[in-house]
Image (cartoon, rainbow, N blue to C red; front, side):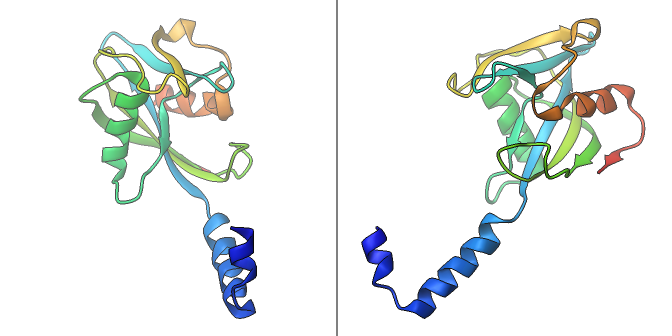
Length: 160
């Protein structure tokens, strides 16, 4: 591949580099779900990369709406089907929140039934579990504890 790129005219390489700079230096759009059952338990997933607990969620795929992404991610990561959207609880854009990339994450609160199947990709998600509020971990991966706390509190939408 490097040999091929080296044979491109200098102007084309300049355009490729400039396009790459713009495409790769844009924030990624993501969604995280503070999903709860009718009896007050909250769904968390245990990440395979760190072994830590987190809210289910991920990046919005090309051509996908936030609502579609919400349902897809909850089913893939948490084994949940038919979530019921309640409200947006926060929009988080702190560039250092996720060490992998700059993400703008919309956190939503939704009602769910307990999971009915395991996570789709065990290389990404080790398990999904429901926690009573008193048993929630003190810390969540990627600084998500504040997202969960805002969703539980039910106040104004956080905008950072």
